[in-house]
Structure formats: structure tokens, C-alpha cells
Image (cartoon, rainbow, N blue to C red; front, side, top):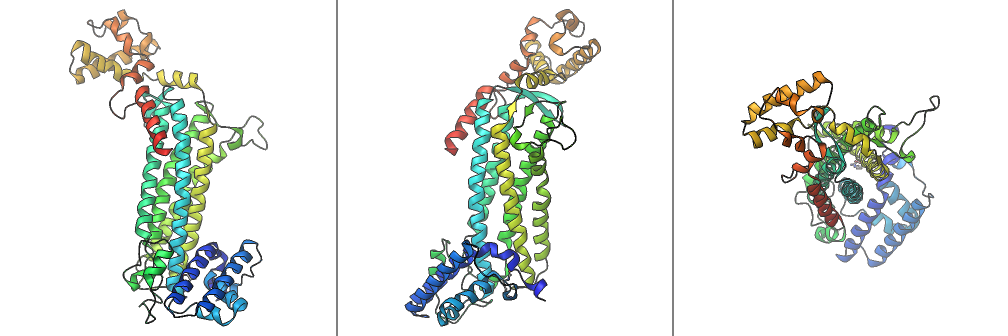
Length: 442
Ligand code: ARG
């Protein structure tokens, strides 16, 4: 029973939140006269001393005492006697654990938000530096149109910005205090839930005691936001894996984020990127795990809900590592501008520019221009050259009205420069957007 029942092995992670919650509860009990101020002082001093013990690694955690709540309370009573036994008046472990999980999740969100801002700063700084560094843009992982490295990095800044918004939404909704819902129906003691809510930084108390102890949607929402963010990071990580492959050779990751092989001396393995790519496995796993635990669970508290913790702890830690590794890789990476430029021009990547030119200069309908361009690409393919290397005479065999002006749009630089629509790839756009982000992020 003890082995399956105890959660102290993992819920000790919430000791700070548990003590914070108890301090607020004790202060409120004294304020409304349920306990004496002397008892409150003893409780406060006892809890402070316990925090010190835990911090120093001296706290005698006991599996027999099941969880962090019982461990702290039993130790408190050991240290301060009677007063410790009065702490649990007007509350239950059911509202206590719901409070601790909310506080823990809120702290985790604040930490992750700071890391997200840092990762965005790294992306935006490199984007500003590479606003005009031409690289291939892909669809289907096939060469599509030239873009810039700065534009590509800013795409991730947008994603991470939305991830911050999702975490902020989650924080807003979870920021109500369940403390005082007690076991499930509230209590007859004249507690002041508004007071504890305010003391703990909540917007107010939760409004239904049953819901307060029965719900974990904030943890699910947190995991969902983490899973989406981890998925974004995994896409950049996968791009690092591809870009650092010598056949691409687009960027070089620093030694700090790569490893050698124990047998193959030439290897530079992108381990950090691979691990960031892999982390959604466990984070999305935690999301699906908790959704599955909560599904069909009758109101109110069920011990099933003890299974919420390892998932959120692990997801937050995994996402934190992924963000740190991503920020580091982005800051350190060395793009190879020459290879990026050469790759950007390969695969007839300026074919769209050619079609657009035919529309503008020769007034061809776009569908006809698309067809003419297709024939020019086929010609270039037969000749074994890229589009800009065709002679005017060769091009005129396909469309006699073509003139020398066409060469102005066939270079990759001209192609990116022309994409001036809002949100487009033109280096001036990208530089301005990077500046805007730098101002917003400070
Ligand atoms: N360790 C429990 C949990 O994590 C705390 C709540 C226990 N409540 C109870 N009535 N047994 O959910």
C-alpha cells in the first residue's frame, strides 16, 4: 500500500508552495481568531525552520507520511507541538494539494516565460544580423523560393510569442485560490478565503468548493501550452539537424552543443538538437496522460489526481532544458552565407520571379506566364544550367518577346528584395521587424 500510495518521492518538488500556502493559511486563521497569534508565530517560525532544513537537505522525508503535506505538518508538530496540530483547521489535503499544484504551475509558467523571452531575444538578435543573408525557402522540403535566414528565424520568434500568450492565458485562468474549499464542501469555520487568495497573489478565491478540489484543467492547459511550444522547438531542432548535415552545410553548431563519436573521429553530432527534437515525446505524453487520468473521473477528489504531478514536473523541466539549449544553439550557430546563397539559387528557385516578370512586362495572364516559365525551366534543365545562366537567345526560343530586362529578376538577391508585401521576405522588411521585436523584448 505504501509503495503505491506515497507521493513524497515526487511531490516534495512542491515544498516551497506547500509552505507558502500554510503560512498564508495560518496568518488568516489568526486574523479571524480561529488560532491565537502566539500559535501563528510558532507555526510561522516552525515552517521557516523546516524550509531551511529542506533547503540544506536535512529534512527527514518519510514515505510512511505519504506526501509533502503530511511530511511538513508532522515535522511542524514535532518542532512546535500543539500549535502545529492546529494548522490544518478549516482546510483539507484536497484543497491544499490543489493550491500547491496551482502555485507550482504558476511559478513554472513565470520561469518558462522568462526563458521564452530569452530564446526570442536570441532569435531576434541573429535575425537582425542576418536580415539579408539569402537562404533557400522550402515547401515539402524542396527548394521553393529564396528567403533570408533572418526571416526564417523570425518565423520562430512569432511562434514563441504565441507560446508566451498561451502560457499567459493559462496563468490568468488558473490564478484563483482553491484554499478553503476544504475536503469538498467548504467549512463552517469563519475562514477568510479572500484574504488567503490575496496573500498568495491570486485574483480571488475559486467560486465552487467541489470544482476547487475536483479540477485539474489548469494543469492540462499548462501541458497543452508546453506541448505546443516543445513542438515548435522540435521543428527548429530538426532544421538544425538538417542544416548541419554536411550535404547541406548551412550552419555550424558550436562545440558546446555537439558531440564527437567514440569510434568515428570525424563526427560532429547535433545531440542537443536531437534531444530538443525528441522532447515533445514526453511532454505530449504527459498531456495525453493527464487527459486520460481525468477522463470520466467522478466529482470530486479522487486519488487518481495524484498522478497529475510527475507529468507537469517533467514537462516543465523538459521544456526548460529545450529552451535553454535552443537559445544557446541559436546564439552560437555560425551560418555559412556562401553555401546558403548557392543553395538559394539552386533548383530554379527564382522561377516565380520570372513568371511575375512575364506578367508585369509582357502582360501575360499569370497562368500563361506559369506555363512559359515551366518551359524555360525545362530548357535550363536540359542545358544543365540554372535559370540566370540561360542566354537571351535560348530564352527567346520559348518566348520571342523576352528581353534582357528579365535578368534583373533572376538573381536570388533581386528575388528577396522584391518580396516587400507586409510580412514578406525583403531584407528591409526583415530588418524592420527584427528592430520591432528588439524594442518589444527590451
Ligand atoms: N498526495 C495527494 C495528491 O497528490 C494529496 C491529497 C490527498 N488527499 C486525500 N484525501 N488522500 O493528490
